[in-house]
Image 1 (cartoon, rainbow, N blue to C red):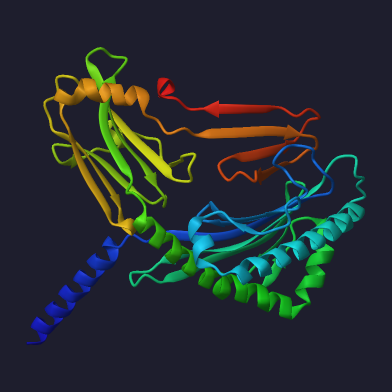
Image 2: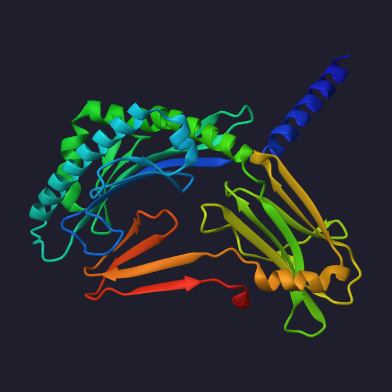
Length: 372
């Protein structure tokens, strides 16, 4: 009887382990990024001060020194959050802008800098969490860091409750802040609790909107390869909001891997704040196997399975030549030494400012089906 009980316990443990192992945890993040310049940069879309909220790297709110109002960048933010949330947020951003102006002046004086070239202070605060089987979020880590002229300046280690100063210029600030116990307790509490609460709310709101949104599209098609006897079979999925997606190309039911020659683009952004991914593999035209593509997006319940046949090759070829969501990258050079990243007020564009030269240049890269 005891052995039967032990066997039952072992079986239960195995089943529980299998259930937890099959659960694919999602990682979510909420970050607020503040950027302040010592003087106007003189480029469109870049302001003396900007602040933005990012949920899973998608902009959800925005404020800049020109318009002086915090605004939603997602429909669910506009629908779910009351007017006083935006009013209080606007006042908070204005206060932060004044703090940035004062702090940049202090840092320039400390480092004996003049204002001939723009100097930039950046501040990022936020948290990262992992979904649990019951749907709750578990805190993984927090972010509370400052960056000056593209270099790490000061950050908070919430695990040990101390400030980290990588340079001597930040040492005096570290010593001062380390002695303010209330500030350290507030930072730790915000990162591990308040930030997680907001992250949980925002993820829930976002998920409910996604449930109403159209499901991602899946295309399975082939095009001619450089080798006359071969084809390139491609599975493309596009229009999904969360980046964690499972895609499998199969041959007679067996999942193909990089060992079989599978190539994946990874998850890439579209220009409408959704994402896309394409996997492809080169096959023989004479291969009579059944090829299929399976796409799973667990958090939205999407499960698509498509089968490819050679009969549809010519119509698929037309699709492959004409369908490709557009992705744009914009880069700009300014004057100084270090490198910073600034987002334009248009959430569909990103701008990398390199403080390394004196002239400003701009270049765009646009992907097209001819290059893929």
